[in-house]
Each structure stands twice: as structure tokens, then as C-alpha cells.
Length: 303
Image (cartoon, rainbow, N blue to C red; front, side, top):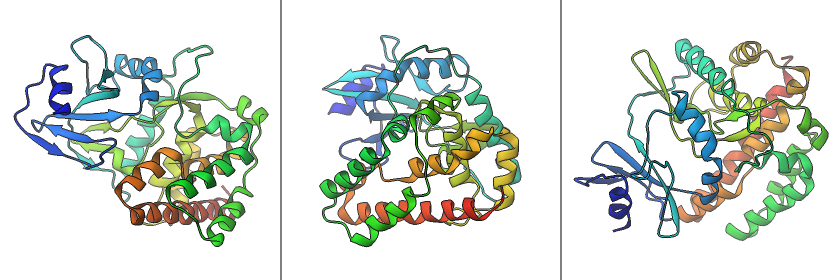
């Protein structure tokens, strides 16, 4: 069994196995109720210097190194990672203490950005590509939907066109934005609380992006009135934006980042298509409806 052989490269003897996500292409497996073994996209290995930075500075404490002292393991034409399994209380939208701790931790992350020179890191959100040529990226998105889902309703395409109309991408703007370490998916399901500690999980989207990207992710997911709702809490939004003291150019690009955060992207489309056509249909509908609500709120309110 492939998982057994991967575990052996970490000197882990398997006593019990539990499938966590059931995704055939990118399985996540709980071993011995202690270790998470997961297959990751090969592009993630390009970002190893960022993972090392976070590990050295005490943020990523649950990564397990293989017997060669590396965090990425190449086996059977796939890349793998192993984490120590953590349990905890999920982010509670009604808990002000959770909000303050998670904002503080996000600020801590972005302030750890190393000097990486001209290294080009993998970004599964393709933020820079949207700024360089948003028309090309938009057409690519429609092609991906057509490839994995099939013909999509014209109303859906028109709504996407309407939403991208609220954006203003340009490479010059991108160059002016401050770049920092970015978790990529800083949302409620990836934040765990236990007693006085906070633990951030699922670092698969770690990269270098504009600082405003993770702030916009926080706004989208953690400034909601409650989990499962599209409705945002304006008081939370203002608290977040004040806490991070956004620059004028960051304010200007906030809607751009919301769009890039939520527009259907290749890795998610592929994963949901593996589950079922119905799951993919839900994802496509969910992203556009959520994006519409967030952009509408940001346009309506004086933030």
C-alpha cells in the first residue's frame, strides 16, 4: 500500500488508518490517530523555503520531517507531507476573543516575510496572472469550467462578467502592493483554538502574495455574521481594516482580491469534479453567490 511505504520514509509504523477526505487524487489519511499523511501538488515543493521560514520561526510546529530531514517526500511520482494531527475548537464567529487572536496571528505571519529576492513562488490563486492579463485568466476560467463540468448556463457566465466588471486589475498596481508571506486560505475551518493557544492548519496554499490578499480572505470568511452565511458583519469588517491599517492602494485593491479569492480556480474545480458533478455544481454556484454578496457589501458600505 502506498501510504504504508510513505509512512516508512518518516519512520512511522502503522497501527491504524483512517481516511479523512476520500479524495482519490489527493488523499488525506490519519495514521495512528497522531499523524496526517497527505499527497500535495508537486508545485508546492517550489515553496519549501517559505515552509522552512515558518517552521524556524515557530509557526509551523506540526510538520514532520522525513528521515532525510526534508519536509517534502517524493515517492511514486507524487509529493507527500506529514503533519502531527491537532484537534481544537474551530473559529467561532460569535467569539470576539477568537477574532482578536486570529487577527493578531495573521499579522504575525505577514510580518515574518523573508528576503527572497527574485524567487518565483508557486501561487495556486494566480494573483499576479490576474493582474497581468485578467481577460486571459477569465477566459481560462470559463475553459476550465467547460472542461470539467461541461456547458454552463449563460446566466452564470453573465454574472461572472458582471462581477469582474467591479475589478480594476493592472500590472502596475500589482507591483506597488506590499508582498508578504500568505497562508492563502486563512479561514474558519483552518483555525483551531485550544485553551490559550491558536493553531493554523492546511498550509497547502502558502506563497508570497500581496499583504491585502490574506486580509481579504479574513474579511470574506471570518467577518461573516455566522458560519454558513454569506452575510457580512460591517462592525467586524471595520475592526479588521482598522487593525491592519490598510494603505490607500490596499483599499483600492480590496475588491480585486475578493474576486481572485472566490473565482472558481483550477485546483478546486479538479478536486470537486473528482467527488461528483453535483459537488462541482455546488462549488461553482457557491463561489459566485458568495462573491456577489461580498462585493455588494463592500460597494454599499463606507469602509
